[in-house]
Length: 419
Image (cartoon, rainbow, N blue to C red):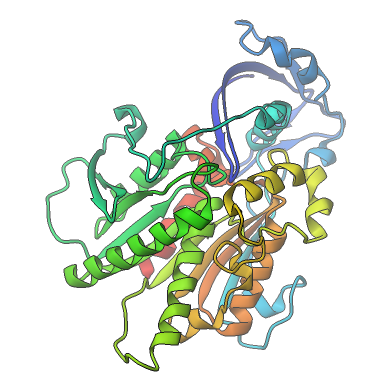
């Protein structure tokens, strides 16, 4: 079986983009609905590509030969368990938890192959020197990245905002609006995968407008200078939405999810302090959707090192370097960059839901699970998926047809459509 992958895997902290072809041979395999399974004693052979497009990785690919199907961790199909967060082994909360968690354990053969290739290319991640202009970055994606949609640019408080307009959609006021914060180590603009994800949401959520926020990027725009600008823009966007009668959802992946969480939590903290003087209730979103969020920039969770051998994309070194680039001269534990240290109960008091996805082969997932448990303990409502054997931001592989990513995106759209 020949597989050609044009792969752009975007993590919280990087993007790897490479076109490659490989032949995958099996002693025996069968592909039931929902997944693939290798027979006993089967193997994967990554043979030399016909077009020599991955010559630098060829000999490493040969080392990927696997002879034990159990090692692959490839299952017959989706195995989903839904339970309250207080029933999970990784954190105890009070009975009747406000957080519902779905557990998935399946991984398709194609996802395993993609993860193996990503691991081979991971060495490229440390060879980047990114420099961006000061302030918000002006975006200009090609039409092919937008899946038939168009972009409408405007600025709010000197921040570029991009509304995604689906084709043949009549101009009319929307009931809801999603502001999406793209991940990329706080250092990279939205990737082609981000545009395609947001375009899909815009097309399928017919009562919802979707906009991408172009935040200032590190290292020359670290949090001490960027976060106040983002918070000012957040306030303005919420005021605009209130006047337009729109309900707002903030969404993001990885570092983008970090910014979304921190903005809402810091704004709520400010409001709680000022309410003693001014009783006016300021507008906030109805929900936050977090995908493989970066939660604690201290990177001190001991489970990070335990998961590191399984993570094909991120390493403890990478996530510590990118956290340092974003925090600038702020302490890594500052609540404005590490939402794990903010007052999570403020979300419950304002009836703001927090939804999320965590992945079992992601070094950022232990902190994400701690956030989920804190939400449950504080009475914050939300729905979460924890998917074992998946890598960081696996959702962004949706454009390449990977089943897990398509399922996860469908779940996101379903949850946000119901909010």
